[in-house]
Image (tube, rainbow, N blue to C red; front, top):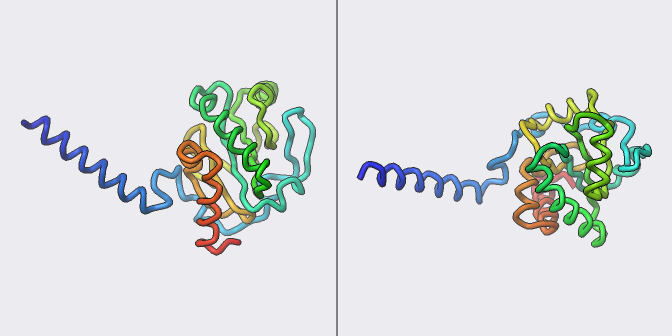
Length: 191
């Protein structure tokens, strides 16, 4: 009798939290730390250089005109990352083919640059990356309250958080999550 009471109470709590989560865009997000910071420039967020999977440098102009940016914190050694990365690759390619204004920036937690580039190549990551390690990656992780990987944060061009739970958004809707993010951006008035 006592066990079924606790199960019922627990289930009721889970359902209540689930209902609240459905109404709140911030439920289950890593941290809303990004919302506590004033808007910023892309150079302040990402530094001056981004990299392609082949190691070549790309300037910030590759992301300056994007309406939405996704920051992907991940590493090859992480099994949940390896499971999620193909979903993100598929969504990013679908959005690119549809002409959506979206780019992913990879922040690696791999052990070294060789592992980072190997991960990017083996999973055909069609996006850009920060140079391995360093203060820029650390500052991004701190700014957006990243507590583990994989984490996907979607921001606007000023660094405002659109979704700190974008991994779940992609898992639930794939590329269609883009429309939800754009709706949040409109509501926030960051267009």
